[in-house]
Image (tube, rainbow, N blue to C red; front, side, top):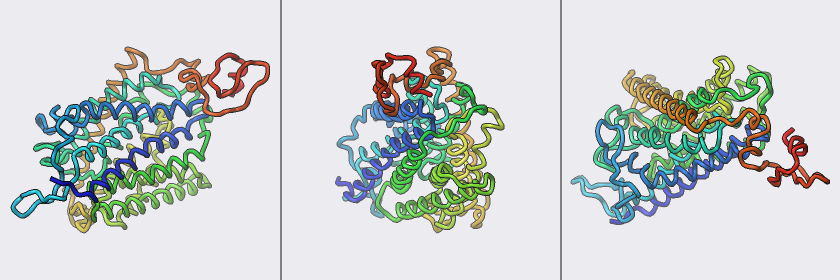
Length: 453
Protein backbone atom coordinates (compact mmCIF):
# COMPACT_ATOMS: atom_id res chain seq x y z
CA UNK A 1 0.00 0.00 0.00
CA UNK A 2 1.05 3.60 -0.58
CA UNK A 3 1.69 5.93 2.38
CA UNK A 4 0.61 9.56 2.59
CA UNK A 5 3.23 11.71 0.89
CA UNK A 6 2.33 14.75 3.02
CA UNK A 7 2.51 12.93 6.34
CA UNK A 8 5.73 11.20 5.31
CA UNK A 9 7.32 14.50 4.31
CA UNK A 10 6.34 16.08 7.63
CA UNK A 11 7.68 13.20 9.74
CA UNK A 12 11.00 13.10 7.87
CA UNK A 13 11.32 16.88 8.13
CA UNK A 14 10.55 16.68 11.83
CA UNK A 15 13.20 13.98 12.24
CA UNK A 16 15.75 16.28 10.60
CA UNK A 17 14.70 19.13 12.91
CA UNK A 18 15.14 16.95 15.97
CA UNK A 19 18.52 15.73 14.70
CA UNK A 20 19.62 19.38 14.51
CA UNK A 21 18.80 19.69 18.22
CA UNK A 22 21.81 17.56 19.19
CA UNK A 23 24.37 19.91 17.57
CA UNK A 24 22.25 22.72 19.06
CA UNK A 25 22.58 21.11 22.47
CA UNK A 26 26.34 20.80 21.90
CA UNK A 27 26.53 24.57 21.33
CA UNK A 28 24.26 25.29 24.30
CA UNK A 29 26.25 23.08 26.66
CA UNK A 30 29.59 24.03 25.08
CA UNK A 31 29.05 27.72 25.71
CA UNK A 32 28.10 27.10 29.34
CA UNK A 33 31.37 25.43 30.34
CA UNK A 34 34.81 27.01 30.75
CA UNK A 35 36.98 27.49 27.67
CA UNK A 36 39.23 24.57 28.59
CA UNK A 37 36.29 22.12 28.43
CA UNK A 38 34.19 23.23 25.46
CA UNK A 39 35.39 20.66 22.92
CA UNK A 40 34.93 17.75 25.30
CA UNK A 41 31.45 18.96 26.17
CA UNK A 42 30.48 19.12 22.51
CA UNK A 43 32.13 15.78 21.80
CA UNK A 44 29.91 14.10 24.38
CA UNK A 45 26.87 15.12 22.33
CA UNK A 46 28.44 14.15 19.02
CA UNK A 47 29.63 10.87 20.51
CA UNK A 48 26.07 10.07 21.57
CA UNK A 49 24.86 10.93 18.09
CA UNK A 50 27.19 8.40 16.49
CA UNK A 51 26.81 5.61 19.05
CA UNK A 52 23.05 5.67 19.55
CA UNK A 53 22.38 5.86 15.80
CA UNK A 54 24.15 2.54 15.35
CA UNK A 55 22.61 0.86 18.40
CA UNK A 56 19.14 2.03 17.32
CA UNK A 57 19.42 0.15 14.03
CA UNK A 58 21.01 -2.96 15.53
CA UNK A 59 18.49 -3.52 18.32
CA UNK A 60 17.28 -0.28 19.94
CA UNK A 61 14.24 0.21 17.75
CA UNK A 62 13.23 -3.40 18.24
CA UNK A 63 13.51 -3.25 22.03
CA UNK A 64 11.51 -0.02 22.00
CA UNK A 65 8.81 -0.82 19.45
CA UNK A 66 8.82 -4.56 18.95
CA UNK A 67 5.98 -6.67 20.32
CA UNK A 68 5.99 -6.66 24.10
CA UNK A 69 7.66 -9.66 25.71
CA UNK A 70 5.43 -9.46 28.78
CA UNK A 71 4.22 -6.94 31.33
CA UNK A 72 4.59 -3.96 29.03
CA UNK A 73 8.28 -3.67 29.95
CA UNK A 74 10.30 -4.15 26.76
CA UNK A 75 9.93 -5.17 23.14
CA UNK A 76 11.28 -8.28 21.46
CA UNK A 77 14.07 -8.53 18.86
CA UNK A 78 11.89 -9.21 15.82
CA UNK A 79 13.02 -5.90 14.28
CA UNK A 80 16.74 -6.32 15.06
CA UNK A 81 18.73 -4.80 12.23
CA UNK A 82 15.40 -3.28 11.09
CA UNK A 83 14.56 -6.64 9.59
CA UNK A 84 11.46 -6.60 7.40
CA UNK A 85 10.82 -2.86 7.70
CA UNK A 86 12.22 -1.63 4.39
CA UNK A 87 9.36 -3.10 2.36
CA UNK A 88 6.64 -3.23 5.02
CA UNK A 89 3.22 -1.66 4.62
CA UNK A 90 2.66 1.82 6.04
CA UNK A 91 1.85 2.20 9.73
CA UNK A 92 -0.68 4.56 11.32
CA UNK A 93 -3.02 4.23 8.36
CA UNK A 94 -6.57 5.54 8.47
CA UNK A 95 -9.23 2.84 8.32
CA UNK A 96 -12.73 2.46 7.02
CA UNK A 97 -15.67 1.83 9.35
CA UNK A 98 -15.11 -1.85 8.64
CA UNK A 99 -11.53 -1.57 9.89
CA UNK A 100 -9.82 -1.84 6.49
CA UNK A 101 -6.69 0.25 5.93
CA UNK A 102 -7.13 3.12 3.47
CA UNK A 103 -4.52 3.40 0.72
CA UNK A 104 -2.63 6.71 0.61
CA UNK A 105 -2.59 7.16 4.39
CA UNK A 106 0.00 6.50 7.08
CA UNK A 107 3.79 6.63 6.86
CA UNK A 108 6.54 4.14 5.96
CA UNK A 109 7.88 2.25 8.98
CA UNK A 110 11.39 3.57 8.33
CA UNK A 111 10.12 7.15 8.62
CA UNK A 112 8.95 6.30 12.13
CA UNK A 113 12.28 4.56 12.81
CA UNK A 114 14.10 7.73 11.81
CA UNK A 115 11.89 9.99 13.92
CA UNK A 116 12.26 7.91 17.05
CA UNK A 117 16.02 7.46 16.53
CA UNK A 118 16.72 11.15 17.03
CA UNK A 119 14.73 11.11 20.29
CA UNK A 120 17.00 8.38 21.61
CA UNK A 121 20.09 10.31 20.56
CA UNK A 122 19.24 13.58 22.28
CA UNK A 123 18.01 11.88 25.46
CA UNK A 124 21.45 10.36 25.98
CA UNK A 125 23.22 13.60 25.03
CA UNK A 126 21.20 15.57 27.60
CA UNK A 127 22.71 13.58 30.46
CA UNK A 128 26.23 14.78 29.67
CA UNK A 129 25.61 18.29 30.96
CA UNK A 130 25.49 17.00 34.53
CA UNK A 131 29.09 15.75 34.42
CA UNK A 132 30.86 18.48 32.46
CA UNK A 133 34.61 19.04 32.93
CA UNK A 134 35.45 15.75 34.64
CA UNK A 135 34.36 12.57 32.82
CA UNK A 136 36.61 10.35 30.71
CA UNK A 137 35.31 10.41 27.16
CA UNK A 138 35.71 6.66 26.66
CA UNK A 139 33.92 5.93 29.91
CA UNK A 140 31.11 8.27 28.90
CA UNK A 141 30.69 6.35 25.66
CA UNK A 142 30.57 3.02 27.49
CA UNK A 143 28.01 4.40 29.93
CA UNK A 144 25.94 5.89 27.10
CA UNK A 145 25.68 2.59 25.26
CA UNK A 146 24.77 0.57 28.34
CA UNK A 147 22.30 3.15 29.69
CA UNK A 148 20.54 3.42 26.34
CA UNK A 149 20.21 -0.35 26.19
CA UNK A 150 19.15 -1.00 29.77
CA UNK A 151 17.17 2.17 30.51
CA UNK A 152 16.18 4.29 27.52
CA UNK A 153 15.01 1.58 25.13
CA UNK A 154 12.73 -0.06 27.72
CA UNK A 155 11.35 3.31 28.90
CA UNK A 156 10.65 4.32 25.30
CA UNK A 157 8.67 1.08 25.03
CA UNK A 158 6.72 1.93 28.20
CA UNK A 159 5.76 5.40 26.98
CA UNK A 160 5.73 5.44 23.17
CA UNK A 161 4.80 1.89 22.08
CA UNK A 162 1.03 1.90 21.63
CA UNK A 163 -0.82 -1.35 21.00
CA UNK A 164 -1.42 -2.06 17.33
CA UNK A 165 0.92 0.59 15.88
CA UNK A 166 4.33 -1.02 15.41
CA UNK A 167 3.39 -4.24 17.18
CA UNK A 168 0.30 -5.91 18.57
CA UNK A 169 1.22 -5.13 22.17
CA UNK A 170 3.16 -2.21 23.63
CA UNK A 171 4.23 -0.56 26.85
CA UNK A 172 2.46 -0.35 30.20
CA UNK A 173 2.42 3.44 30.61
CA UNK A 174 0.96 4.06 27.16
CA UNK A 175 -1.63 1.27 27.18
CA UNK A 176 -2.40 0.24 30.76
CA UNK A 177 -1.74 3.32 32.86
CA UNK A 178 -2.86 5.66 30.05
CA UNK A 179 -0.73 8.54 31.24
CA UNK A 180 -0.32 11.32 28.67
CA UNK A 181 3.19 12.03 27.43
CA UNK A 182 2.84 13.37 23.92
CA UNK A 183 6.49 13.90 23.05
CA UNK A 184 8.68 12.73 25.92
CA UNK A 185 8.37 14.56 29.24
CA UNK A 186 8.92 11.24 31.01
CA UNK A 187 10.84 9.18 28.44
CA UNK A 188 13.23 11.99 27.51
CA UNK A 189 13.45 14.69 30.18
CA UNK A 190 12.67 12.99 33.49
CA UNK A 191 14.67 10.03 32.21
CA UNK A 192 17.74 12.13 31.33
CA UNK A 193 17.43 14.37 34.39
CA UNK A 194 17.31 11.46 36.83
CA UNK A 195 20.29 9.83 35.11
CA UNK A 196 22.19 13.12 35.24
CA UNK A 197 21.62 13.35 38.99
CA UNK A 198 22.84 9.79 39.47
CA UNK A 199 26.03 10.41 37.50
CA UNK A 200 26.72 13.68 39.31
CA UNK A 201 26.68 11.69 42.55
CA UNK A 202 28.88 8.93 41.12
CA UNK A 203 31.56 11.30 39.78
CA UNK A 204 31.46 13.80 42.64
CA UNK A 205 32.03 17.52 42.52
CA UNK A 206 34.33 19.44 40.21
CA UNK A 207 37.50 20.81 41.78
CA UNK A 208 36.59 24.19 43.21
CA UNK A 209 32.82 23.66 43.05
CA UNK A 210 30.98 26.31 45.05
CA UNK A 211 34.32 27.99 45.87
CA UNK A 212 35.62 29.19 42.52
CA UNK A 213 33.72 30.95 39.72
CA UNK A 214 32.77 28.55 36.92
CA UNK A 215 31.06 30.97 34.58
CA UNK A 216 29.97 30.18 31.01
CA UNK A 217 32.85 31.04 28.72
CA UNK A 218 30.75 32.01 25.67
CA UNK A 219 27.18 33.20 26.11
CA UNK A 220 26.88 33.80 22.38
CA UNK A 221 27.19 30.06 21.82
CA UNK A 222 24.63 29.44 24.56
CA UNK A 223 22.05 31.66 22.90
CA UNK A 224 22.70 30.24 19.43
CA UNK A 225 22.31 26.76 20.89
CA UNK A 226 19.06 27.72 22.62
CA UNK A 227 17.74 29.15 19.35
CA UNK A 228 18.55 25.95 17.49
CA UNK A 229 16.91 23.90 20.23
CA UNK A 230 13.73 26.00 20.00
CA UNK A 231 13.72 25.68 16.21
CA UNK A 232 14.27 21.92 16.30
CA UNK A 233 11.72 21.44 19.07
CA UNK A 234 8.87 22.19 16.68
CA UNK A 235 9.82 18.90 15.03
CA UNK A 236 10.12 17.29 18.46
CA UNK A 237 6.60 18.25 19.56
CA UNK A 238 4.56 18.92 16.42
CA UNK A 239 6.27 16.01 14.69
CA UNK A 240 5.03 13.70 17.43
CA UNK A 241 1.58 13.92 15.83
CA UNK A 242 3.22 11.65 13.22
CA UNK A 243 1.02 13.34 10.61
CA UNK A 244 0.53 16.77 9.06
CA UNK A 245 -2.77 17.45 10.81
CA UNK A 246 -4.59 19.54 13.39
CA UNK A 247 -2.85 17.87 16.31
CA UNK A 248 0.50 18.94 14.90
CA UNK A 249 -0.78 22.52 14.58
CA UNK A 250 -1.99 22.59 18.19
CA UNK A 251 1.34 21.20 19.40
CA UNK A 252 3.22 23.79 17.33
CA UNK A 253 1.32 26.78 18.76
CA UNK A 254 1.49 25.43 22.31
CA UNK A 255 5.25 24.91 21.94
CA UNK A 256 5.69 28.51 20.78
CA UNK A 257 3.75 30.21 23.55
CA UNK A 258 4.85 27.97 26.43
CA UNK A 259 8.48 28.56 25.55
CA UNK A 260 7.99 32.30 25.27
CA UNK A 261 6.17 32.43 28.62
CA UNK A 262 8.87 30.38 30.34
CA UNK A 263 11.64 32.65 29.13
CA UNK A 264 9.77 35.73 30.34
CA UNK A 265 9.02 34.07 33.69
CA UNK A 266 12.66 33.08 34.18
CA UNK A 267 13.79 36.64 33.42
CA UNK A 268 11.23 38.09 35.84
CA UNK A 269 12.38 35.65 38.53
CA UNK A 270 16.00 36.69 38.00
CA UNK A 271 15.10 40.39 38.12
CA UNK A 272 13.21 40.01 41.39
CA UNK A 273 15.76 37.68 42.99
CA UNK A 274 19.05 39.07 41.66
CA UNK A 275 18.23 42.56 40.44
CA UNK A 276 19.01 41.87 36.78
CA UNK A 277 17.84 39.70 33.89
CA UNK A 278 20.55 37.79 31.99
CA UNK A 279 21.07 36.29 28.57
CA UNK A 280 21.83 32.96 30.24
CA UNK A 281 18.49 33.23 32.02
CA UNK A 282 16.67 33.94 28.77
CA UNK A 283 18.26 30.91 27.11
CA UNK A 284 17.68 28.69 30.13
CA UNK A 285 14.05 29.80 30.32
CA UNK A 286 13.59 28.85 26.68
CA UNK A 287 14.81 25.31 27.40
CA UNK A 288 12.71 25.04 30.58
CA UNK A 289 9.57 25.97 28.65
CA UNK A 290 10.36 23.53 25.86
CA UNK A 291 10.89 20.75 28.39
CA UNK A 292 7.66 21.41 30.28
CA UNK A 293 5.37 21.69 27.26
CA UNK A 294 6.78 18.52 25.66
CA UNK A 295 4.46 16.07 27.45
CA UNK A 296 1.53 18.51 27.56
CA UNK A 297 1.39 20.04 24.09
CA UNK A 298 -1.51 17.83 22.94
CA UNK A 299 -3.44 18.06 26.21
CA UNK A 300 -3.77 21.80 26.94
CA UNK A 301 -5.13 24.80 25.08
CA UNK A 302 -2.84 27.74 24.19
CA UNK A 303 -3.73 29.65 27.38
CA UNK A 304 -2.98 26.51 29.37
CA UNK A 305 0.33 26.26 27.50
CA UNK A 306 1.22 29.78 28.64
CA UNK A 307 0.48 28.70 32.21
CA UNK A 308 2.64 25.57 31.83
CA UNK A 309 5.51 27.64 30.49
CA UNK A 310 5.26 30.38 33.09
CA UNK A 311 5.17 27.90 35.97
CA UNK A 312 8.11 25.98 34.55
CA UNK A 313 10.14 29.17 34.07
CA UNK A 314 9.69 30.14 37.70
CA UNK A 315 10.10 26.67 39.19
CA UNK A 316 13.19 25.78 37.15
CA UNK A 317 14.84 29.16 37.82
CA UNK A 318 14.45 28.48 41.53
CA UNK A 319 15.38 24.79 41.27
CA UNK A 320 18.86 25.32 39.81
CA UNK A 321 20.02 26.54 43.21
CA UNK A 322 19.24 23.16 44.80
CA UNK A 323 22.66 21.80 43.93
CA UNK A 324 24.38 24.32 46.19
CA UNK A 325 22.05 23.61 49.11
CA UNK A 326 22.07 19.83 48.70
CA UNK A 327 25.73 19.54 47.70
CA UNK A 328 25.62 17.73 44.36
CA UNK A 329 27.44 19.13 41.33
CA UNK A 330 25.06 19.10 38.39
CA UNK A 331 27.37 21.15 36.19
CA UNK A 332 24.90 22.55 33.65
CA UNK A 333 21.62 22.18 35.56
CA UNK A 334 20.28 19.06 33.88
CA UNK A 335 18.42 18.29 37.11
CA UNK A 336 17.08 21.80 37.65
CA UNK A 337 15.84 22.18 34.08
CA UNK A 338 15.15 18.75 32.60
CA UNK A 339 14.16 16.72 35.66
CA UNK A 340 12.22 19.51 37.37
CA UNK A 341 10.80 20.87 34.10
CA UNK A 342 9.80 17.38 32.97
CA UNK A 343 8.08 16.71 36.29
CA UNK A 344 6.27 20.06 36.13
CA UNK A 345 4.97 19.53 32.60
CA UNK A 346 3.95 15.93 33.25
CA UNK A 347 2.05 16.72 36.44
CA UNK A 348 0.44 19.91 35.13
CA UNK A 349 -1.40 17.80 32.56
CA UNK A 350 -3.40 16.43 35.48
CA UNK A 351 -4.43 19.98 36.35
CA UNK A 352 -4.66 21.90 33.07
CA UNK A 353 -5.67 19.31 30.46
CA UNK A 354 -8.88 20.04 28.59
CA UNK A 355 -11.06 17.87 26.36
CA UNK A 356 -10.95 20.63 23.77
CA UNK A 357 -7.32 19.69 23.08
CA UNK A 358 -6.43 16.68 20.89
CA UNK A 359 -5.70 14.37 23.85
CA UNK A 360 -9.37 14.73 24.86
CA UNK A 361 -8.92 14.55 28.64
CA UNK A 362 -10.05 16.98 31.35
CA UNK A 363 -7.70 17.73 34.23
CA UNK A 364 -8.62 18.78 37.73
CA UNK A 365 -9.17 22.45 36.85
CA UNK A 366 -11.53 21.49 34.00
CA UNK A 367 -13.75 19.19 36.03
CA UNK A 368 -11.90 15.94 35.47
CA UNK A 369 -11.02 15.29 39.09
CA UNK A 370 -7.74 13.67 40.03
CA UNK A 371 -8.00 10.66 37.72
CA UNK A 372 -5.48 11.94 35.18
CA UNK A 373 -3.29 13.53 37.84
CA UNK A 374 -2.55 10.25 39.64
CA UNK A 375 -1.78 8.56 36.32
CA UNK A 376 0.70 11.31 35.49
CA UNK A 377 2.30 11.05 38.92
CA UNK A 378 2.75 7.28 38.69
CA UNK A 379 4.33 7.54 35.23
CA UNK A 380 6.70 10.30 36.32
CA UNK A 381 7.70 8.52 39.51
CA UNK A 382 8.29 5.18 37.82
CA UNK A 383 10.56 6.63 35.16
CA UNK A 384 12.43 8.76 37.69
CA UNK A 385 13.20 5.86 40.02
CA UNK A 386 14.04 3.39 37.24
CA UNK A 387 16.37 5.81 35.48
CA UNK A 388 18.10 7.01 38.64
CA UNK A 389 18.77 3.50 39.95
CA UNK A 390 19.80 2.21 36.54
CA UNK A 391 22.17 5.12 35.88
CA UNK A 392 23.69 4.93 39.35
CA UNK A 393 24.39 1.22 39.09
CA UNK A 394 25.80 1.50 35.56
CA UNK A 395 27.87 4.54 36.50
CA UNK A 396 29.32 2.77 39.53
CA UNK A 397 30.19 -0.30 37.47
CA UNK A 398 31.97 1.84 34.90
CA UNK A 399 33.78 3.71 37.66
CA UNK A 400 35.09 0.63 39.47
CA UNK A 401 36.12 -1.17 36.27
CA UNK A 402 37.65 1.37 33.88
CA UNK A 403 37.31 4.57 35.90
CA UNK A 404 34.87 7.34 35.09
CA UNK A 405 36.65 10.50 36.23
CA UNK A 406 39.77 12.11 34.80
CA UNK A 407 42.72 12.82 37.07
CA UNK A 408 42.91 15.95 39.20
CA UNK A 409 45.86 17.20 37.14
CA UNK A 410 43.95 16.72 33.89
CA UNK A 411 40.90 18.49 35.27
CA UNK A 412 42.93 21.50 36.37
CA UNK A 413 44.87 21.67 33.12
CA UNK A 414 41.75 21.24 31.01
CA UNK A 415 40.00 18.18 29.64
CA UNK A 416 40.14 19.40 26.03
CA UNK A 417 43.91 19.39 25.94
CA UNK A 418 44.53 16.31 28.07
CA UNK A 419 41.82 14.10 26.53
CA UNK A 420 41.54 15.31 22.93
CA UNK A 421 44.94 17.05 22.42
CA UNK A 422 43.07 20.11 21.14
CA UNK A 423 42.02 23.55 22.27
CA UNK A 424 38.84 25.26 21.16
CA UNK A 425 40.23 28.64 20.19
CA UNK A 426 43.18 29.86 18.12
CA UNK A 427 44.94 32.23 20.50
CA UNK A 428 47.84 33.12 18.22
CA UNK A 429 51.37 31.94 17.66
CA UNK A 430 54.14 32.14 20.21
CA UNK A 431 57.56 32.78 18.70
CA UNK A 432 60.58 30.74 19.62
CA UNK A 433 58.73 27.82 21.19
CA UNK A 434 57.69 25.74 18.25
CA UNK A 435 54.20 25.74 19.69
CA UNK A 436 51.17 27.16 17.94
CA UNK A 437 48.33 27.62 20.40
CA UNK A 438 45.18 25.82 19.38
CA UNK A 439 46.92 23.68 16.76
CA UNK A 440 46.97 20.57 18.94
CA UNK A 441 50.73 20.53 19.60
CA UNK A 442 51.90 19.68 23.10
CA UNK A 443 55.55 20.69 22.58
CA UNK A 444 55.89 23.52 25.06
CA UNK A 445 54.53 23.13 28.59
CA UNK A 446 55.03 26.76 29.56
CA UNK A 447 53.07 28.05 26.57
CA UNK A 448 50.38 25.44 27.12
CA UNK A 449 49.89 26.61 30.69
CA UNK A 450 49.61 30.20 29.45
CA UNK A 451 46.97 29.11 26.94
CA UNK A 452 44.96 27.34 29.63
CA UNK A 453 45.20 30.36 31.93
